[in-house]
Length: 572
Image (cartoon, rainbow, N blue to C red; front, side, top):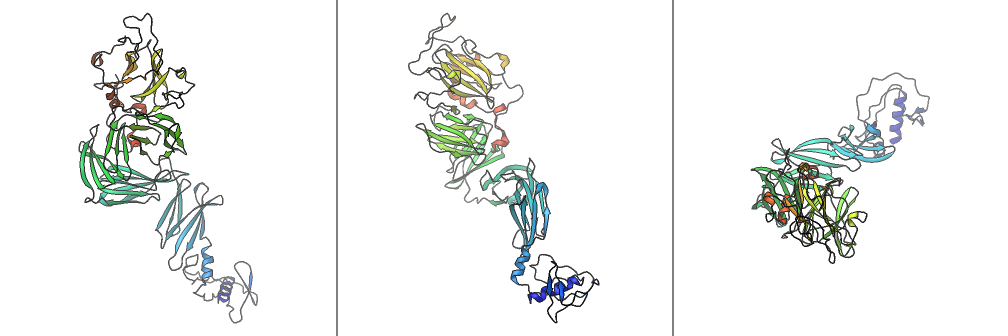
């Protein structure tokens, strides 16, 4: 039967007649109307030319008359159908050297596949049609490649702002714009909207979790690593309001219990919804311009302003309770590990925009840019993570690198503090007295140095900074980086190590020059006069990251309204 079928087709081709395929749907080409027969020379007796140029001996009694196509057998063997499926319908040249080989497959339920190649290497495959989606879209080497149910394939390069794949209408009046992003490490984002307002964004794929879920307007919206987004209404019977909490910046958080280890917080400013957090079996955190909110799975929260070191560089840091952590960066991701007895306990790396980890009592929030904040629940002492030199003679004092001249001498100690406006201060204490270096965050540029000879910044500096009790063994730095009625903060210098003494200053006028002498010559005026200095605990409330060191609202991801914003001329 098979030989007769092939011989009949060959005879028809020699005769110049287009045979209409009557094979099953597994053939690689769609059947169409046959063109009118054209006269042609008869084939030599006993021979019939094949399409491949080979000859086949005609079977007696089955020769075809010139110009007439023989009837085709409608039952093609399975082996022939498989062979046809291995032949591309077409080869398409796409952008940037990509090539697509399109195949028609299936029998009773045909579909298409497209194999994407570049320079002979196979990069991926798409499928569309019966049994598969009507359109299949994949991200391949920085391109959005699409195959539809008719076997048409296209490719578009992903731009720096991503490529909008589709807009999906979700439950509850929500909609989501799904974008393809990335190049060698593709991922997807979904921007969720309702009534013309943007509620938030989800991310999934390379460098992010394979699936992310957030609650928007009473619906749990999920984006997966293939760019599929869905929304399901949150069961109000298991989402019970347990309390309403006002945060330090005035934002109101409504805490809902879904189950014992799943809580969510809806955030409001002036009665308007401005963001949500979901803690399902692990804590979630938000950062709004230096105000942090941590929601734990059991519904408890931590909320503070400051204690933040934006864009920190890899190294070893000490927290306010003495906990020592090491920050590192690997494959573009930041990670932290606990240091105990001068030994690391293993790094945990960030997978997303931010993460919350607990070390002992310390609650630490690590950001995507390497910045991190630390909060010690129940402690009166709060501070941003400070650079810490390991191997400091066994004393554990905070030291800069050995190449820093401030580190010379066993009686020199340092600590770092954030003073706001994207600025930090390196407080250096030695027998020569206190020295404060004001340093901008990010580029680590020294913008001013205060010491006994130059104890205060001029008014033209734009911020207030001055040494207090500079000729005693317990000096401090007073700073105020915001104008108006904003309060300043006082930051104590580290104490001299045991056995070290402060040098006396002979000839000092108007003050006691002894190490334990009285008032410094730089006496704060007005609201910060002696006896009216802000308490050290108040200083943490002023450590709002603004200016060059601010974490933008978009980067913060929490979405609630910025709590503190600098305005033109706000410095004083």
